[in-house]
Length: 340
Ligand code: DAH
Image (cartoon, rainbow, N blue to C red; front, side, top):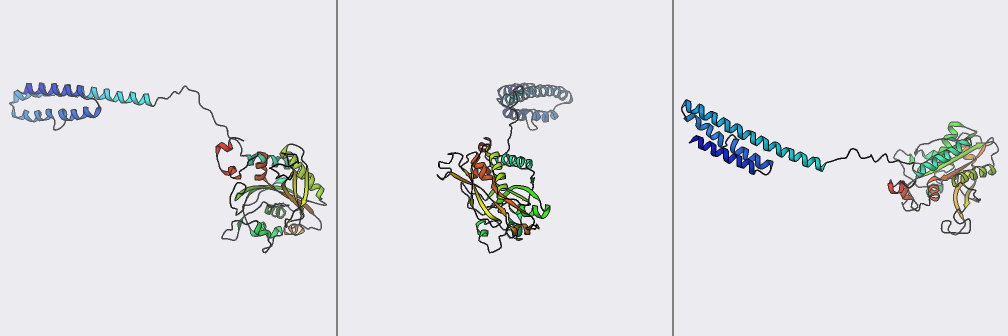
């Protein structure tokens, strides 16, 4: 009786193992036959009712069936696991013998490139490259540059004020004052850097852009000296001879002050959209340093004089590479940057 029940369970269990189509089905069958409340466990409980000899014999038989089924379950489970691993290896296959894609070479931002070129040029001419803070005092940004509080020139350079009375510098000109304070005369410096204006942003206006300030102080500096350096500067940038002209221009920190124009490099002076048909492009404001500025920097204007200029680096980059939207420069867009 017991024997036939056992062989019946064995047969049913074996065919359930055979039929299980995945690991979950196999596990359900294992619980059904080998689990704590499964078919074999039930028979184990019934053994108690048998006589000692019968119990020993039936116990052995039960154990051998149990062992056989455990083996078969384990075997099939291992098979499922191997299947799953094989499927995963197939899906995640990686050919480690393929050549690596290699390092993507980076490049300097076009603004940095121009800045470095100009630094090289001016150091070769005996100028020092100096730096100043982007958060500036009102005195360095305005007063010391001969722009007193009520002067209309302040309105032309609206900026971002901090609660402590400092401001984001509107130009690199305050570095002139810092350099005079620090080094005295004679002096030859350039100061490239980031400046800020409270501007409505569009294709030609940014709240953040770059300038390069220059200053030379010595004895008997003339407009002729200034022109020589300005021409040298422009020819280095554009890598060809340029024709320049001076127009009067007003900046409180220079007297006389000039706008230095270059003859349009695109049309050669005959007129085109870039120069707005005028033949000239305004590029480089400059002038002889105002005596009040020298005094503010602690230099005696009876003994020394000099010239200063303010080059718009951002503007220059846009001209050199014919970039028509200033916002691209700080977009971080690789499609733009990879062209340089
Ligand atoms: N700081 C002026 C500006 O941002 C530019 C400038 C004009 C600088 C004349 C100079 C200069 O040194 O002489 O508009």
